[in-house]
Structure formats: C-alpha cells, structure tokens
Image (cartoon, rainbow, N blue to C red; front, side):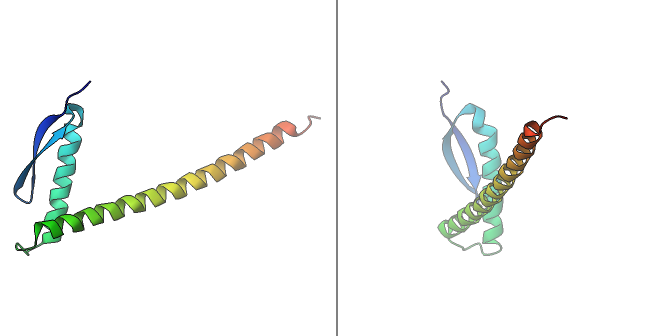
Length: 100
C-alpha cells in the first residue's frame, strides 16, 4: 500500500503543500502547472484580482471543458454502439441466409 507524501506546488506565486501518492506526483505537478498557467491567463494584467475569484473562474473553465469532453465522448459512444449494432445485424443476416 502506497503512502501519500507531501508535495509542494506553486499557484500564482503562492506555495501549497498537498498529499500525493508517489506514482501520481508527475501528474499532479503537470496539473498544477496547467492550473497556474490558466490562473495567470485569467488574472491577466490585473495583479489586484482576488485570488479566490481567479481560482473559481479557472475551476469553472476546467469544469466546462471537462463537461464538453464528456458530452463528445458520450456522442462517440452512441455512434459506436449504433455502428456495432449495424455490423452485428449484417453478420446475423449473413449467417441466417441459406447457402445455395
């Protein structure tokens, strides 16, 4: 069983320590870098923007992107299910057709 270890990340020049499984550290660091970048983009040149507002807007943007990806995947899953159903029907028809 793995044990969470403390990992320091920086977001908008503030340091945070979070617990993380050792095998998830690289992913966490990449996520923190992406979040920091998005927060800096949202804050723009307004250095006085409230950190909590910047964080909420970044979280909302990521949640919206995640929802869009989930919707796209659900659409692809439905299309794939239809295609597989059509192929199964064709195969059934082939096997049900008497050989002459």
